[in-house]
Image 1 (cartoon, rainbow over the protein chains, first blue to last red):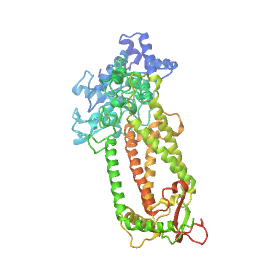
Image 2: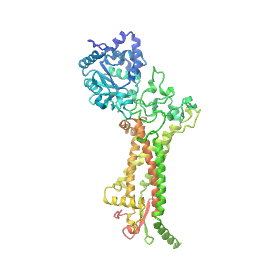
Image 3: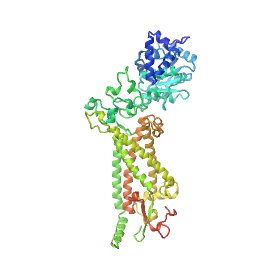
Image 4: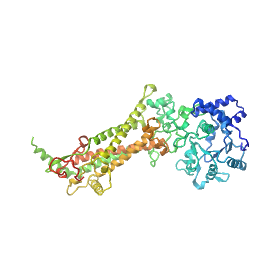
Length: 374
Length: 243
């Protein structure tokens, strides 16, 4: 897998070579086009691009991460996604899946980087630990930072796979001991597609790559650098339990009658209302289900700082610096009580301190009252 | 303020200011109540059919309507800060001259720390806002901006209307909806605290100074000792008296 072929195969050629027939290929094209949010008329263009475009050289780097992104990818809905787009994307270097190892693998990587300078796509899975001079994560004698900078220098574009590479994920959670840093804070001079999620949905990953292959340009990104086709909507906005939310029907605990009825999990801390992802539409594990469908609220894994964003099973607003019980409402209630007490004290003190002034006013005004003419 | 002197009626709060004040009151009360309901909705209903109900939907609709009201009265007030009278104009809120600092000291001593003056000087009583009040309104104006930006930021993604979409950059700026919501929710408490202190101090001034502090936001008038008004006839509107 780590060898560089002289004549690059097209995607179609490698699909056929892998024992799929044309019908499978067309099904795949239709399916991936649908996920990308394209019109039916665009299916032909997707198919044509996959037929004629030579496979894109890809270097897939793993840094501080758990490889769940790769796992998600190879368990993608359609076999061609795993077999072709990942396996045959011409992954010239990926630590998890490549056959080569040691110096051989590094040599293959460097060969790709030189040969396809400015052409290859760099996929990064994992965050970069910046603490302790980057010693928390070293590969082939180089720190993750050095390795990333080297690989990024010749890349056409960078795809930040998963929450680690996109926003730091778990490693960057407070107190972030390794100073885990997402890619976009390190590499500033290359286009970066952020595909957050822990892990991101396999089809989303495939969709991004097919988009680049089909149109030759990066997909349209939102303000946070995420592909709009998959991250334009909140999980909440595409959730099949949304009617229960709007109706005001909520489960109060995971074992109550309301939960059994399939009511909205909003009060159980579901982060769907503040999480942008395609879980509600594309779903997971071959479209079988997604967390909310399985009765568990969304934990917001594709959002920045989701580990630090308060409890997973409570709808609370945490105030930084106030500990676990420091929800905004608890603090607010206490503060309002203290304030009310302060106001009461002030009112009493005012009555005492201003007694003379008041007495004089009352006296004057009483005199006026007595002297009223009519 | 002595009983021998007469009082003069001063037109302090113009109609636009009063309208702003009470619509703002309405908007803030509705926003806070519906805001709490949205943040932590009661789950009283069981075994009901979603198609028959729209509780949360209605609550959110009311919240959004009140948000528009809040925004529009804020715009009205900003406009009035340009063309309004001396008590409404933006210059009344700028804490950059010596007189303002003198007044702050005075209010701190007399009204907050409840010290007594040796000789009561009515010149010290502000006709419009006192200087500490103006500073608190500046802070609240900033908080209102925070609420408008975070609120419409959260709302923008589900709206097709261009106005909320002007705020679509807010969520990404804070890194995501969650952070925006945190700010929105925590800032709401500032409004509650402000309201408590504000109402108390209105009562305090009305009770102590007896010149129509509370009713002035309804009628527009306050009363000052005639010594503070130039000329013999009715309170002239020629703007020459000292604050």
